Amino acid sequence: MVWALLWSCLASLGTLAAAQRVQSPPQQAGPKVHITPGSAAAVPGGVTPHAPPPATAKPLPPTGGPGIPEVPLLKKNVNLVLVPVVITDPLNRMVTGLQKRFFSVYENRVPQKIESFSSEDAPISVGVVFDSSGSMSDKIQKSRDALIDFFKTANPQDQFFLVDFADEPRLLCSFTSNIDQIEDSVTFLQPRGRTALLDAIYLSLEEMRYAKYPRKALLIISDGGDNHSRYSERDVLRVVQEADVQIYGIGLYDPRGERATPEEIAGPALLDKITEATGGKTFEIHDIDELADTATKIGIELRNQYVLGYAPSDTKPDGKWRKITVKLHPPPGLPPLTVSARTGYYGPRQ
Image 1 (spheres, rainbow, N blue to C red):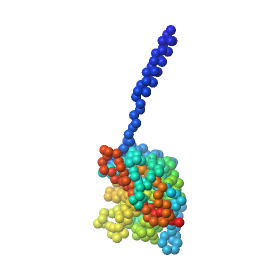
Image 2 (image 1 turned 180 degrees about the vertical axis):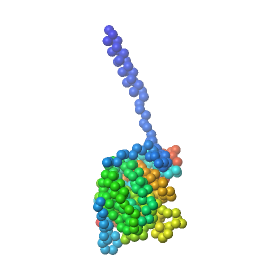
Image 3 (image 1 turned 90 degrees about the horizontal axis):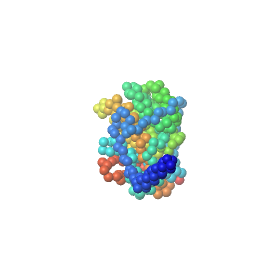
């Protein structure tokens, strides 16, 4: 009798619970948009940096005939164009959590269908371009420390290479996931010589052909303008625009009144032009103690971007410049937002 009564009670409770589930369907959650706090020394936005997993110099590729040798970083047989996008608010804080439907992409003012959309921390191939010229003598240790802070934001699957430059660029460490190898290579660098920045960027884009991942970036740490490169600004800018590589710069410039040469005066504008053409940016450092925080901020930004992919509707192999425009249609309630993305690319050639 007791067992029958107990069984009857349990059955009644099960019926009541099932009825409650039917009467209270789960509510669909709306999009959660998150604005990352400002660039404090600590990692903002609740992002936990992954622990990193526990050289031979390579010469600059020779020029061949008129112009510059082609760096086929944007594969002509791949139809999908990837566009990394960073969204910031009026206080320059990153905005994450936006969905695909809030974005639209145009190529030469023609709307494109977004075929792929990602905002996850996917692995990335990164090249570090490190200034070891003589003018870095009082900044090189802080630059080493900043690089270590940059690596603290890395994904364990990320891969890196290191190019340093003075009178000429050198590939000190080819692609590796062993961050200790990169840090050891930087430790023994001694400042000397002049500044071949443009040659170093060119060599780095050449090395980027061996990248494992579709997302690729360069981080340039330098204190001034170019004064010893074989390649011109025009040459390198063309290669940068052809490459599917996002470039960030950290500019350790002297105060404007203390820049002694025309190259030093033109240095900030040069680095700005190169980075902005790729959808990246240059952070100008006025206080050397800000260097580590800035490197951390760049690392977080690289790993919290939106990546839009589209197959161009224009399939002509004309090799012409194609302008990319990304527009944002955010949900109501957000402040005015800024969109940073690559400005375009050169189409395929026959």
